[in-house]
Length: 282
Ligand code: NAD
Image 1 (tube, rainbow, N blue to C red):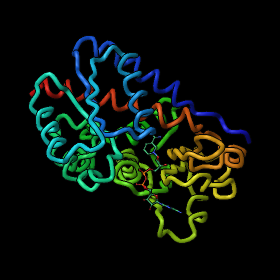
Image 2 (image 1 turned 180 degrees about the vertical axis):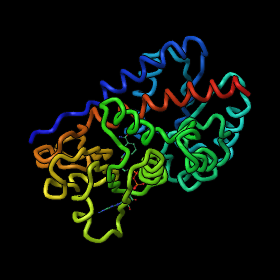
Image 3 (image 1 turned 90 degrees about the vertical axis):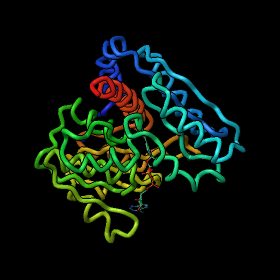
């Protein structure tokens, strides 16, 4: 079997197209706070602004020096919370080493109504209730759900195996899939005999950060495989899935790049639109 390619670019363009008229009507504004010059962050931020342009959304880049103090950064967060012209904002991670330990404090300080990354406890906690309360889901899980819906891949009743349990990808995607009636198994670095579990998956989601961890022998014939991983190697950017061997077994697979990445960005734009809609309702 040769797998169908699930193009995140195609699905992201479709999502952005539905956002454009809403952006025109609601005029939201997205702000990205960047500290320092991490090259990967610079590239992700570029993609975010490109998508803002694609839907004609107002945006602002606050770029701070590497040696910015936590006091200055917190001050900016509080100002953005208070500014009625700012719909939503993100503080791009990773932060420089001196600030990285403060990430929980920064996330906690962001107004949940403006938390378009969906990383705060309020937005994450609400997701446990049901799909109705998934207003601002973390961007990557939100994007994966849109991708599955775009390609009409059924979720209800399917066994989904998620490899990785981070607060930003693995755990929230597991909750969103449960909300949609999947049977979900979550694996992580302490899971024994990973292949035994991944081979049971109708849908396999890899969010680990280890190049080529999932190989063809770990995948059931006909499974749908979603590769979240983004790993820099000598061969360039690769996922957590060994594409060559897995695409021979899977019925559908996301490429890296061009799979989950564009969905994450489009989902962030959607969150900014949702945030504006909800701010106007209040
Ligand atoms: P993380 O480091 O926070 O979490 C990694 C998870 O993998 C952990 O839960 C850990 O227990 C698990 N793990 C580690 N080794 C394992 C092993 N051998 N077997 C099974 N599980 C193992 O990472 P994250 O932030 O969730 O990101 C995961 C990957 O996804 C990274 O490559 C990251 O760059 C990528 N990512 C991509 C996007 C995107 O838009 N495409 C967005 C977010 C993250």
